[in-house]
Length: 286
Image (cartoon, rainbow, N blue to C red; front, side):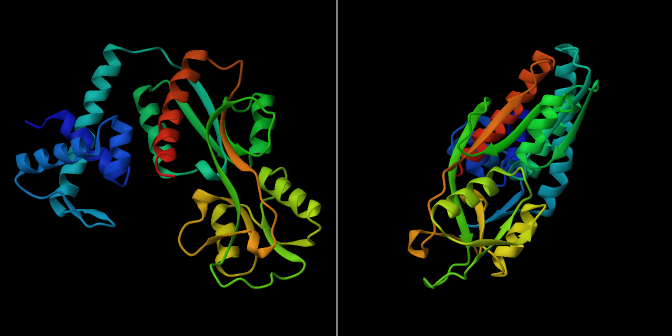
């Protein structure tokens, strides 16, 4: 018989794409997570993951067991929920800024919805200003987004530097006017970037108006433009352009959780817990 604890660890390692993130999600040490996976492989008698210093990949047997593991955990969760059921019903509209539209968070929301068949979770991805307007109008019940130099309320999940994203290269004179890739208004990164450039007396032009992080990254990776980005969004091929380029410093991006006062308090609290756990896991990797 399989130990549910070991299966849960196995699934977490795959979903969180690593042992350290899985350990943080499960509130275990990394050595405990490694031990769980080792015990599971001993039970099966076959390797489940091919591991290198840089990556991990499921073996064919790991793929087979993963399907069963998810089903076993789902049945276990359903049985627990049925016996401990809280009567959550209705629609929950959740607004996510581009920074948060990630598979790990969406999987967590999907798992939550699976526990409560009476709940319908609808997600809208947009810039924070638009999402907060929809929260005020009652169209959304939760919003997770990043702001800069804000007086808005909302629970601070974490903060990180906002930087000028460009290509890693020897210091050269940047084009004039400075070509920018930006999200449309009301984007907090756009507003603060334009304000700081204006105060520094640096001419700029919007070379590319973007509707997604993918488009923003493409603009920078091609050398077409420079863009204000949270440091965690840089990824391979991009670098933060420092003061040596003559660019003004940018404030921190503050990642916050906002809730509608008229939403069901119990449901909001339960969903907020899911989002906060995701945020803690992501923050630990910064």
